[in-house]
Length: 613
Image (cartoon, rainbow, N blue to C red; front, top):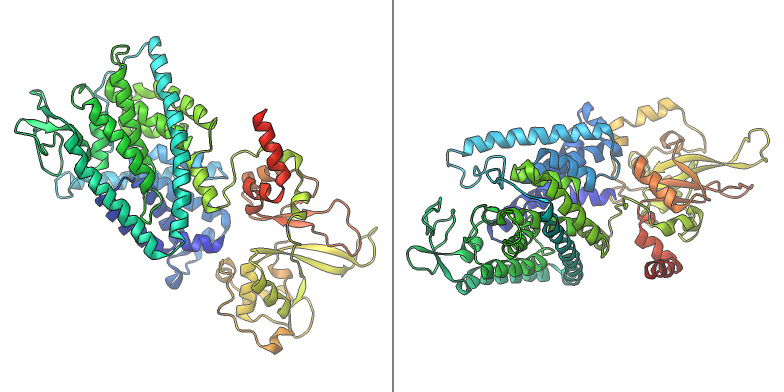
């Protein structure tokens, strides 16, 4: 897991994400910048916590506060919140996004830390926007801190409007779950293509880019030209890089509404569809073509080898279908078509991502209209409920495809019928080390296993009153990184004995023990050193979390998530002489529902029977 973090949140990844995101968004691909910005925020947070890149790491003493797993998770969570805030200019929404989707272990201290991070981001962002309002920064300064402002719309709705609003939520849940299903199939195919090598990745991205360009430039010819309205607040028509009412192939005094949506940035396209008091600005056929096109582009673009996010493509799809519903229901309701577009975008996002609270706040901060709160809440709740009845959220589907050990929010019901002891029996036998271990044994364990921690046991210890002579003691848990440090520093003993505390302090400092690199590539051990010993007692965590083998998997999963564990030792109910005092060790990978079902096929069959009933 440490190797995954070093790769995904390293300095090289940060540079690739920054320039890759700029290129992908500039190319006009159907992708959002919020996903890369979240990843960039996490990379920056991880690099700050460890003092910089691996080869140029700072050794300041205050950095030791971030070298434990809990605080490192916290600062990466703050980075994710900052990324959402930078993408949507939504500080509170960024905090709630981390609470709802990112963190598996939430504390009150983490709440104010993420809030402080997003507050700093929004202040800096506002300062840059003020500088760019002079017009020297292109389109960056447009819109202030409210990206899709609809505050000028007077929102009026009645009890009878609950029915069409509920319909928006139901359709959003159905379309969102359908989008998840189709995207899952596409990602499975893309994984097979990407596994064939870099050339296939490049060709796939190139094919999608060419297909996108052909569609964007060819489809506007299908739209009919519309005359410019005399009350238009902007120049009409125009062919400049920004602005609405693109002339395209139309005569003077006319504009192409589909070209207006396609020949602009994704942010401006959303602003156009969200625009209020413009019932005749976009034709039904153009909106339908736009919706179908972005459904197809959203499916084929996500998963190629470019930095991409899901928020903006889903907002584009949802706003188009919401405005279509507004046109269809204009004789039954007085709600503006632009507001229907906002509700459609919210419903499709809730139907696909299954977020509620954070999504509601993000949309309120995006649109700057508090009067939308009641109907937005109804739409989000209905969409999430409908979507949950079909399939998991898109984030869970992607995590499952990548095999990342992100624990579900709640354990499955069938996990109550399985104990951690049974789960440990289905795994290979646990690898243990002695308190004073031979160097050759440590080298063998590190080379032949990928485990991140190992139980340390002492045999034939002096037993307390009532225990048999020759009892075995579970001393604790030692990390793989600490074993690697022992070999690198060559902290070996010529005889089998316990060491004193001063010997450890003389050989190791806190910086070395905080390192999480457990690789063996740079370690060279001679044949004579192989016969020496290492005292593991001073480097062992003597208070690891232990559970009885009779505990249910559901209870263990809750403990893992609430306490933020990485390892959990399983101890037997009855301990006999000659039997190891540890029955197994559990990690996050072991508690993923998919891995458990692979180890116990009969649980899959019983789960399917419960679904049918």
